[in-house]
Each structure stands twice: as C-alpha cells, then as structure tokens.
Length: 124
Image 1: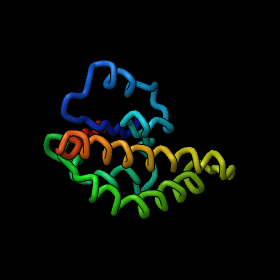
Image 2: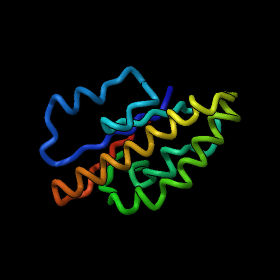
Image 3: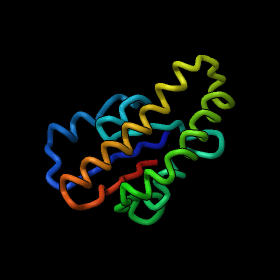
Image 4: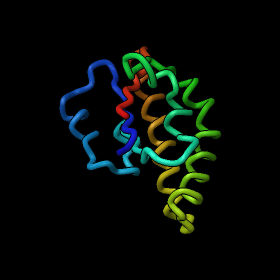
C-alpha cells in the first residue's frame, strides 16, 4: 500500500493525466505525481500536501505554500530513505528528493500559467 499524490490543474489534458500513471514510481514529480510507501512515520507527502488528507482527499494548495514546506519535506524524504528503506546511496536518495522538487516546480509553473493553484489529490 502507499500514498499517491496527483497535481491537477486547469486545462490539464488527458495526455498529461495519463503521464501521471507511472507504476508507483518515486521519481516522477515532474509530471505531477508523488509516491510514498504507507509504512513508518513522518510522511513527506503528508507534510507537503497536508490539506489534501482528510475529507474529500483533495485541496487547492498554493505554490507559495508548497515552496515554503519543501525544505522540511526534503529532510523527511532523506530521513525516510535512510531509516525506513535503509538506503545508503546518496544518488538514489537525491533522485527521490528531486522528485519532490520537480513536483513543486511543476505546481509553480501551472499556477503561473493558469492563475490558479493546483488541486492536490491524495489517494491513500
């Protein structure tokens, strides 16, 4: 089981949505998808996108707020990779962290393009 996070934006095309179906990849933030295993504690996705957890499982979250939360989310990613997954390869850890950076950057671009914050959908 896991946590799947999807960014949705105004005028998102079916092709863009299809790219978000990645087979549970942890490296596809660039298409608006984040994945985290549902085990352990301190979830980076729950920290970054906390408003999307709960009733309705979605919320509009401003890119500014995502950007403000990103540094702490990256700390949580690193902590999880090292303690839960026993990952010691910094390159592999950095790939997962980059996915979170890419996700936030995509949300920033889409908000600038559309004038509206992305809707963040959490499936868990």
